Image (cartoon, rainbow, N blue to C red; front, side, top):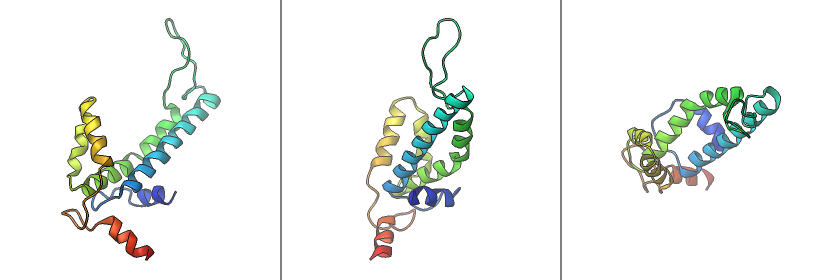
Length: 139
């Protein structure tokens, strides 16, 4: 939860660097929150993840965010972009590399590889190494 709060506090901070743990814990918490909110939408409001499909030719369940999931996703859009840019900075890449994710399939794979890559050891053009900074804080 500390990683999530840290990202929210740096709401629109697109400078500096973010560790892998910071990015992926934020992503994990967001995925869990969206699933829970969508399930609540489906069961309470009938518009979320588990809402039954209606109409000719559709059967079973379909997945959509629902009202609560959509509101939450919009609320964390800027912090999510900020932490993704800082994560790319940690690998010594520009935040503009996020746009490669707009290319279907290949762009998303390349972006995921960038996001899971180990950060540059020591300072780079985007700031000090966040691993060294946090290791000094706990020593």
